[in-house]
Image (cartoon, rainbow, N blue to C red; front, side):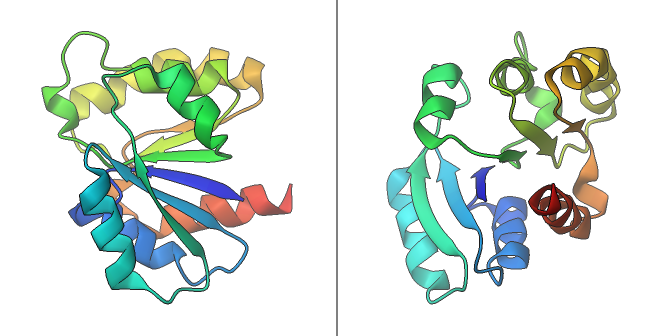
Length: 151
């Protein structure tokens, strides 16, 4: 299973990677705007049971092309701060739904989290889940990955 962790070398994304790196069936794309930082993070974590792959990902860039390059099963957005996202703040969610990729984020901005419910019907129609605000429960990320692996 391929998991793209956007903001994967940051504080919360890094913790998510640490929680998942013991699973040998995972490929974890540790992604962000700096490939050098992603690479350094992955090198510090080695060796791991999961395969850690440093990756360049810009949530302001061409999301469809970036997601197509990784072909993840799940995107975990830990890039934040979610309350600072302006116009198009749900672009990554929309791109994930369009490509039928499961999405979850670690948002703690209540306005951002509340707005995600607008994507419920589209996500259901695409056969994917969209979960927001799971930052208080980092183990949920691992549980979601485990559940998807069984399907």
